[in-house]
Each structure stands twice: as structure tokens, then as C-alpha cells.
Length: 481
Image (tube, rainbow, N blue to C red):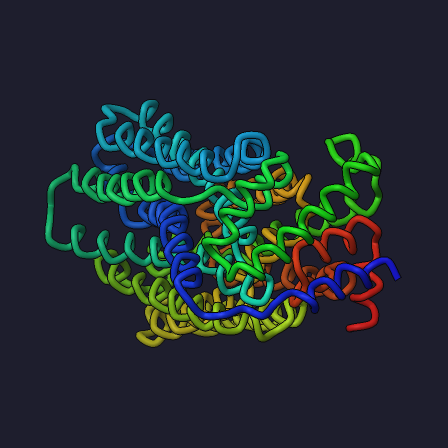
């Protein structure tokens, strides 16, 4: 069978061993995850900054939607271009560029005099956020040994929700102690600090060894691998990466033309796009961007909603930490199925609660808050981390940046449409109709995962590469189902 050689090679790799190389891999993941932290903070800060920002700049409901969604739509193009740039220029140097974009975007937003320049700053931040969402998970997946790839690559998603929680907490503190109409500028300014930390940290980090091999820099790749593996494991792993790369070059399996003429590569692209869109259509980022609006709609006062909004942020971090534990122990497909089943159930419960508990009922806001928290916890534990890890590992090396870029482009477009129209949707059909709609989409997503998404856990990136290119990965899925 076509996949036997890579699997035998994976089985023959020397086992992981403790030592300084494991600690260095941990340091690399922490530094790179400042990109995820910035992603989370810059997407979450709008949740509490929007009301004072609107008051100072005279925004309308429509321009509020433009300010919020401009970052998200820009992130779609940032993901697409970031993936391509990282394929050509390197993962490390691309992350350095993104750190600069994060800092510039923050400065523009903080010092903006009007709506138009504010949107320009948000677009700059969006390009950085989208680029980070595509490049950082790939960098981590390519640095990690396959046995712990899930927990290493998944750290980026945990950093994202830590960034969002940080934004919620800072917003709640600043928003409740200051009446300054420019308080939102301080909320945004804080994100300059992790941007500087990301830039300085990445200056000292190595390049992805798999990208180096693809560019013919085999000695450099070996030197990097020796810093994050034992020496015998580094040599064996380099040999496996070289073998697959040479096979691809011999068969001319490189370039965009190869992707578009290989039905198996097109199919895996569609799987990646479908997963990204399904993740967003659960409505998770509607809660992260407009959580205060949902809680006010459910019955909380504005200041109380700002504080209560911290609860989903806390449970997201807890769920992310649990997800890291599960990533190398539970199959990806099973994780997706559990997650979509739970989120769909909580969508239905939120809708029924909003329908049966009349406005003014003192229990209404607390019941809806509890269900929103449970939804976010389920999403973070079983879907968010798993989707980002899956997208970082499923594409072959020669198209990895492009593949995740296109998938995350679709993810961000779905995110942007929801962020632009979510307030109007809640206004038109209420919480009940909105969450019933999310539940219907959840059922379709379950069917998609069960019938189309193959398993990736427990295999080296090189074994996955051959399985995906030949279509054997779908045969394995059918046997495992």
C-alpha cells in the first residue's frame, strides 16, 4: 500500500527523549505564540472598546459594524498572502514582518482622529492577525515531533483565547474605573507590548527545518533539528523529510499547477475550507466580538454585562488547556464530532431559554450567561484548538502555506460576514432565532465532518503528505470510522 513506507519510517524514528532540546522547543512555542496572543487581544478588545469609541467618534450602528468587520475581512487577505509569503520567504521572517504590522496598526488606531483612519488602522491589524493565524500554527507544527504535534501547535489557539481574556479583563477594569471618552485608546495601546516582544523574541528563533529542506538548505535544517531533537532523532527525521521532498521533485509535484491538477489536493483544500467555515458558523466569534450586546439583550445592565463578559473568556482559556491535553490522546475526527454535537445542543438550549424566559424575568440573563459559557467551553475544548491544529498539519509541505492560507481566508470571510451582520441578525430575529439558526448550521457541519474529514493524528507530516497526495488518507478514514 502507498502509505506503508512512511508509516514504517515513522515507527523506526528514535523515541523522544528529555533534555535541553525539549526545553528549547517549549521556548520557541512560547515566543511564536505571542502572535496568537496578539490575534486574540486585537480581536477581543473591540468587545468593550466599541461603546466609548462610538461615543467619541460619533459612529453609527453601520459604521460600528464596519470598524469591527474591517479587521476580520482584512484578516482573510492577510491569511492568504501570509501563507504565500511564508512559503517563499520563510516562516520566521514572515512572523517578524507580522510583528511590525501589529505595532503599526496599533499606533494608527490609538492616535486616529476620525473614522476613516480608524478603519485603516483596523485593516493593518487585520492583515497582521490573518497572517499570524496562517503562519504561526504551520511554524509550530513543522518544528514539533509528530507524537506531540497536537499539543505544540495547539498552544497558539490557547494563546489566542488568553489574548481575548486579557482584552475582556482590561476592558472591564478600565471601563469601570474611567469616564474618559478616550479610554478605548488605552485599551488598544496595551497590545503594542506583545508586538514588541514577538519581534525581539523571533529575532533569536530558528527557521522551520522543513521549509529549509524544501529550499535545499539541508545542513541548516539539520542544525535546527539538533536544537529541538536528540541527535539521532534529528538525523533520522531529516532523512524522512528529504526522502519525501526528493520524491515530489522527481515527480514534479510542486507548484500551484500541481495543486490544481491533482484531485486529491483539491479535495483536501475543500476539506480545509469546509472545516474553517464550519468553525466560524458556530457563531463563536460573534460571542467574542459582541458578547456584551448578547448579554445586554438577555437582560444585563451595560456595566454588569462588561464584567459578566469575562466569564466566557475564562472558560475559553480553561477549555483550551483541556484541549491541549486531549490533542495527542483523542483522534481529530472524534474531537470534531463531540464538539459539534455539544455546541449544537447548547445553541438549541440558548434559543429555547430566550424563548421561554420572558424579558424582565430575573433568571433570564443568568441562565443565558450560563449556557453561553457552556457553549464557549465546549467550542474551545473540542473544536477551536483541534481545527487550527488540523489545518496546520494536513497539507503537504510544498502547498502548506498556500493550503492553510486559502482555508483560513475562507474562515475569515465567514467570520467577517457574521461580525458585520450579527447585530442586525439579533435585532431582526432576537437571540432565539439567531441561535436556532446556528444550531441548524451545526447539524450540517456534523454531516460534513462525518462524511468528508479524514484522520491525521499519530502520523508524521511526511506520512500524511503521501497519504493526502495519493488519496489513501480517505481509505484510512473509512477503515477507522
